[in-house]
Structure formats: C-alpha cells, structure tokens
Image (cartoon, rainbow, N blue to C red; front, side, top):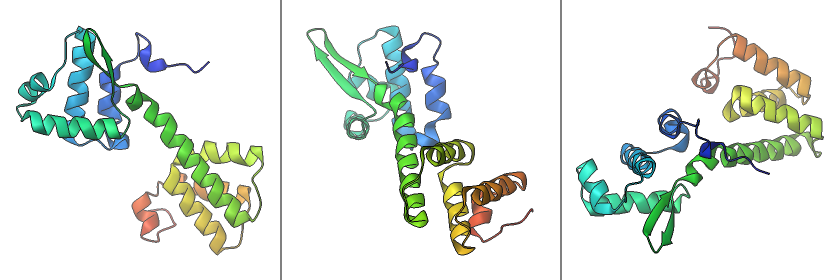
Length: 182
C-alpha cells in the first residue's frame, strides 16, 4: 500500500512548501495561498476567497485566478460536502513522485534510443540512482558526452558523472562547454 507520508503527524507541510518551492515552480502568490490553506486546514477554519484575499491584501479575483491555476496543475483539489468546501493539497506532496518518475521515464527513453536497445532493469536502476544523485540535466549532459566520444557504456558515463561531481562542475559550466575542474 502506498504510504502517504504527508498525512503523518510528524510531516511538516509548511517547511516542505518553502523548501520545495523551486521544484514546484510556484510564484509568490501561489506559495502564500498554499501556506494559508495549510494554516487554515490545521486550525480547522473555514476557507473562502474573501478570507484569502483579505489575508493576502489582494482582490478576490486575483485569489480566484491563482487558485484556479493551482487546481488545474493538480496541486489543489476541492471536497464539497454539506459542511462546506474543503481544500486538499495532496497533489502538492505527490508532485515529487510524479516529477521523478516522469524524469526517469524520459532518461530511460533517451538512453534506449542512443544505445539502440531496451535497457536492462540494472541499467534502469542505475539511471534512477544517477537521477537522484546528480539530477536530470546533469545525466543528459553525460549521455551527450558519451555519444560524442562513442563510448555508450554505463561505466564510462558513471566515471564522467563522478568526475564532474568531484570537480564541482555546475550545469552552467557544462552548458558553457567546461568539462574540467575549476
């Protein structure tokens, strides 16, 4: 059964929102709306557009637009019952799993295309490890490097990634063509 860690008492939802803001690609208004929803849900207060607009010092129309965008992106869902409308933010906390699985699928497809064969389960696990350790763009750069040098072997790509990490090369460095230590 899938564990919904964000529903555990010890999970700090507000800290998650603040620390994962870049990955979630929230603008400041969206972030504040989500923080207020979390706060009001925790306090068991009724949430409505007027209250959010008042707290944020913006119009209800603006709050409605941002809230609609969050709903469309799957971050917010509404539960409507006899007691009123309840805002759920499960989509925010499930986002990380969705993003990583999409990135992994993309990497598997790219590698399979370049290797001209399906990847083994061990190779897919290795890609998942690299994705977590280095990030998607870093791994794509290493694949391009291996293609250029016609060294389409996982140990070769592993050495590239480890060397870049050791040399503390950033994505900006790689995009600029730098491949050696600073």
